[in-house]
Image 1: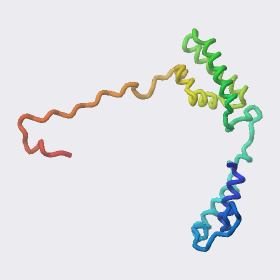
Image 2 (image 1 turned 180 degrees about the vertical axis):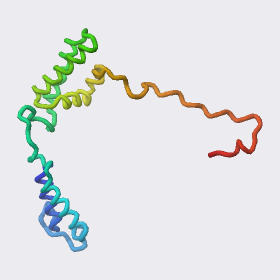
Image 3 (image 1 turned 180 degrees about the horizontal axis):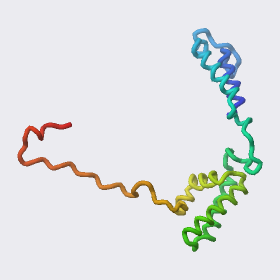
Image 4 (image 1 turned 90 degrees about the horizontal axis):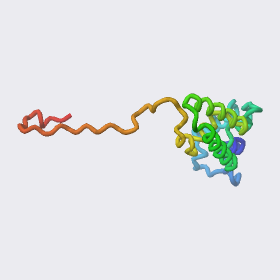
Length: 167
């Protein structure tokens, strides 16, 4: 749903009308309660004045598809380009591979009209970047295998009152 349609629906609800039929709501409807009507008008005013509305965003002519959905064709082109890149850079040292990936990503981003971050995010979403080693020189922040659990202490042979006390 686009923002203009959402605004029209909220406007109808705030006016006490059913957005689908235009008929007024019954007096005992939640949409006729004072606080609900005030909240809807407040939300409507905020949406109409919001500077982040999609129509108000400047469009970068070099990245016309920023924020738009990926089509299956675009995704397949990205898959093919990534496979070709991996084939060309498979024998490079790690530092050269990182530089080659950064240059390739910028090239593909320009070809798709998207940002370099969007290319990385899409590769990760479709599982290609993680499968290729994530192209990152940094170690993971957490251990790959969780540590062994610590076993509780064995009960003592001579029980005392202290053994019965638990926190």
